[in-house]
Length: 71
Image (cartoon, rainbow, N blue to C red; front, side, top):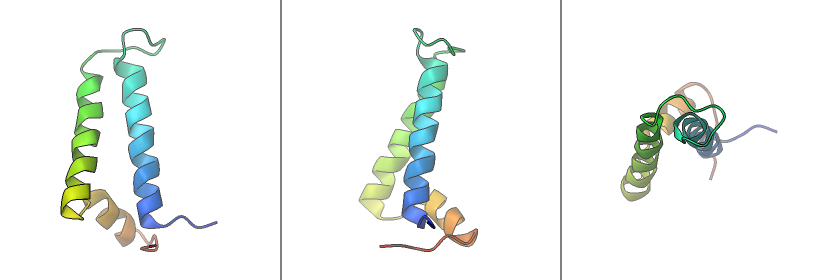
């Protein structure tokens, strides 16, 4: 099963969010620093921006790496 570019972008964004929450939430066993929550916010802002502008840098990069555009 070959993933399309938009599926890869969502997979990467979700992974980044979960990892940054694990590293930034004080109750997490993987806690490093609350500053990791800034990365969570950065990913969220980029998701909002791409929804409003219909352009995503990550998707452009993934397409150039050979992923199909998808629907």
